[in-house]
Structure formats: structure tokens, C-alpha cells
Length: 160
Ligand SMILES: CC(C)(COP(=O)(O)OP(=O)(O)OC[C@H]1O[C@@H](n2cnc3c(N)ncnc32)[C@H](O)[C@@H]1OP(=O)(O)O)[C@@H](O)C(=O)NCCC(=O)NCCS
Image (cartoon, rainbow, N blue to C red):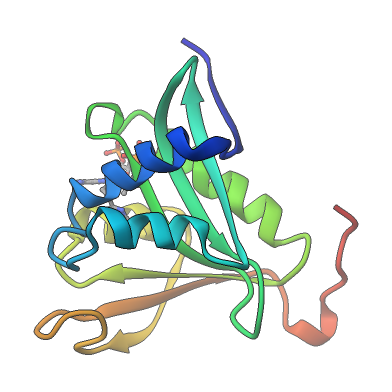
């Protein structure tokens, strides 16, 4: 089956992504339930892209493209049965292509209790910037990561 990456469409797809988040780590430990996940996927300034295989939503990525922290990957998830098949890599590559047209940095936070995702980002060239202790829930940190292509003063936006 061919997998395509495209903007999210309609409430059914939003619900499918919210279910994926609410039913999976790290969001269970981070206490992000279905309603909070819908809010993450629909709040202003967010862009959401999905990996779709036919009618099925296999994964998603949420970008924050506004404000001082432009280029922040807020969330990424792949459906449990579809992990480790390269879909996550494709979603991040798609997000980088999108973000690097407008900003020279991609930021992402990964939970301290999520070593699989930490390995995933390291293999994609993300650098650790620092640790945000007790950031979302007490007792766990979020680790801020960055990939950069230039300082802001040397960066030129490319038309969409
Ligand atoms: C992290 C995630 C998005 C990666 O997507 P994916 O489609 O599984 O990743 P890919 O197939 O593109 O890349 C897999 C690579 O990532 C790493 N990796 C990802 N998840 C891993 C895990 N749970 N354990 C070990 N390695 C993992 C490995 O290096 C792996 O390479 P390999 O397959 O050659 O061993 C996906 O596993 C996922 O949804 N995890 C649960 C939600 C999550 O942790 N989201 C990140 C929040 S910051």
C-alpha cells in the first residue's frame, strides 16, 4: 500500500489522531486525554499533516508555525502496528522541508522516559539543547532538541 503525507482533513481524521495520542505513550504518562489531544490538533497556529495509507491514518505530525518558537514539532505519532517501517522518518523529513522554508531551526521536545523516540531523533541529527525538569508532569523532564541550518541573520525564506 502506498503511504502519502498530506494535510489533515476533517473531524474524522482529527478524531483518529486524537485516539492514537490518547491511547499511546508518551501521552498516557503526560496525561493528555482524547479531548486535550483534539485541542492540540486544532488550536490556532498549528499545522497538522498525516501519513495516510488509503483510507487509514497511519501517523501524524503537528507543527507550530507561529510566534517566537516557529518551527516547533509539537507532536508526532505513528499507529502502533505501523512503527519501525520508516513512516516517522518520512513525517519528520516532510516537516523539516516545510519548516526550513520559513525558519532555520526545527525544535522538538522528547520525554525523559521515551528512549525509543530519543534514539529516533538522534539518528535524524537532532542535538540536545537542555532539559526542562518537571515540565508537563512532576517527576519527568522534557528534553529540548534542535536541528539548525543557519543563524537567523543568514537565513533567507523560500516562497511556499
Ligand atoms: C517515535 C515514532 C514517531 C517513530 O516513528 P516510526 O515510524 O516508528 O520510526 P521509523 O520507522 O521512521 O524509524 C525507526 C527508528 O526510530 C528508532 N525508534 C523509534 N521508536 C523506537 C522504539 N520504540 N524503540 C527503539 N527504537 C525506536 C529506531 O532507531 C528505529 O530505527 P530502526 O527501525 O532502524 O531500528 C513512533 O515510534 C511512535 O509513534 N512512537 C510513539 C509515540 C512517540 O514516542 N512519539 C514521539 C513523541 S516526542
